[in-house]
Image 1 (tube, rainbow, N blue to C red):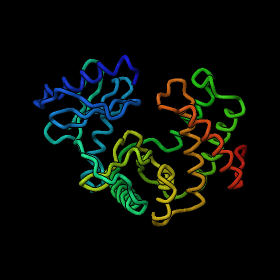
Image 2 (cartoon, helix red, strand yellow):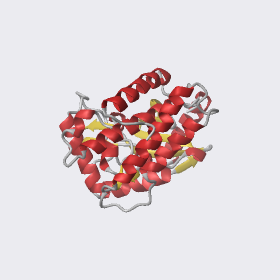
Image 3 (cartoon, helix red, strand yellow):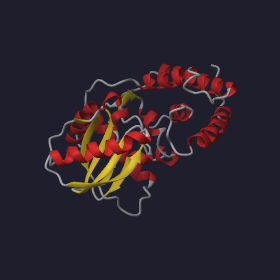
Image 4 (cartoon, one colour):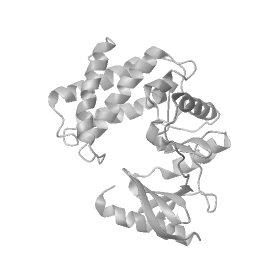
Length: 283
């Protein structure tokens, strides 16, 4: 979120909580990206705040309720207030249960895989309209093609990313394997270790596709413990996901700290992975 908006977003979250009967005198910023994640005190509530024009909060609120009802390991909304999106001063505010992290925070690959498998099992019971994973790949392709949005991306790197996204999107889609509702980005940053067990957060990226697309966001060791994995498909998905997250880092508006350095490292990893797996990005 832009620095100039952070103060207003914090004020909107505190004001919203107070209007709902919660005591909120202070806010701790837990994460600042496309949306602001805050811990409101002393009521101890997690607030997620985003500009109304950019948010998909209503989808996330409704999906979180349905997934929780299906037994999925997901964070739940704050039970003391009505589960809905609150709009204030141009921001969409949603209020969630705050989970105190447990120590140690290291999650074993086996436990990670078990939680993700449980999430996927619950998601198979939920029928909601969501984008296909290829729609998200297409977003990355458009960003690569837009020189105004990615002005620092060198021509050779732009060609590499564009070719990799296009070819692997086609290869994976043409496999025609089983598809289902997915988290979309179940990376370690979206997995909480809590006293209630492992819980996934940030459901706004949900899409449909093969479970290997989700597994590609997790550490490699996790795939070794997930049942029934198509190893070839997982390798392709890992390279595709790496190309996608590399593309986001070249966006001129990207706010990830050290993102440009990471983008350079990831480009080298993409080249090495394509060569190691005998894949042709021009295919």
